[in-house]
Image (cartoon, rainbow, N blue to C red; front, side, top):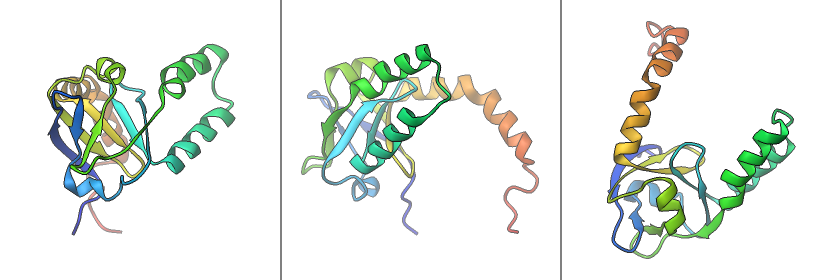
Amino acid sequence: MTLKTGSAESTLDDKGRVNIPTRFRDQYQGDLVISWGMEQCVWIMKPATWETFELKMRNSTVFNQEEWRYFEYKVLGQIQSAELDKAGRIAIPPTFRRYASLSKDCMIICAEDRLSIWDVDVFYSYLADKDSMAQSAMNKLGTHNIFKAD
């Protein structure tokens, strides 16, 4: 079984390029969109995924004016083009590295719709901060039945 999602540690080189793990590379060939993530990370998406995401956000009625402005500045206003180089790396612009506090050691999270690039220490701090929320969500699901087939 080939895993198309998951996480892997990686490194950021002196030129600001992060090595994308081999198992994720085939999903992220060609033109890509890079943006600040909602959390302190960098998002990388295919253009079609970005367009769907942006359209849903622009058509949403859940934001008040201040929330929309913040979202627009933080995420929509930060997009840039990106692509994997021949060595399987993506160049992370300096402002993105600063925003996400990216240092040498990175964590790459691959969901179905995007890559998230985190500084390893920031990522583990984020998980620790959100642990009680995750525990509460699992309790709501009823963990005694979650792994059983229907």
